[in-house]
Image (cartoon, rainbow, N blue to C red; front, side, top):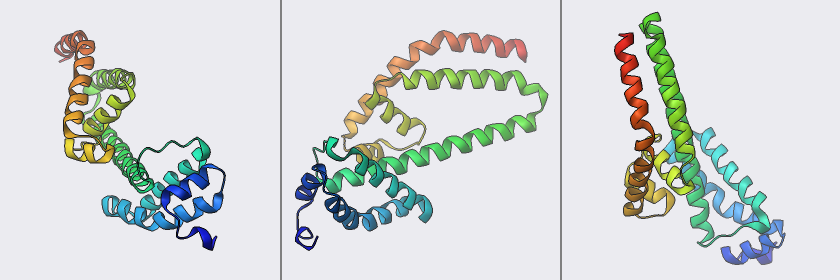
Length: 195
């Protein structure tokens, strides 16, 4: 193991892809603390930061010989952690939004039952259509709309340009808008009938 300590990340990655788990251990030891600190700065939650870094390394380990990395190992790991952090923030915000909606629904009483059902149906339909977007476009759109990240934050997280982020969001909206134009007309008619 001592002979491997001074090796470059790329050399360690090559060894790891050939099944050398000592090489993985060295990459882990080299980056775990730095990735943890990076995640902690954003999340302000040590346990969540640890979980996210562990998830990234478990995924890295599971990919093993099938791994294709076109960037430096450090860049790959930092990007993976940033993506997991933003995904966690997004899921947390969605959960909070659902809790807020539920609280509003409860306080409004029975009168809002129909409106809540319609809202649930719209959200389910929108989610279904978002899931049908091309993978990269979906990823950018969800980071923008669900995680509420700025174009710069998304660009940094995914290692793409601001221009690419704007284009992906614009294309997503172009694909989604026609699918909901008629749907919203029906919903508006229902709202007027209900209220």
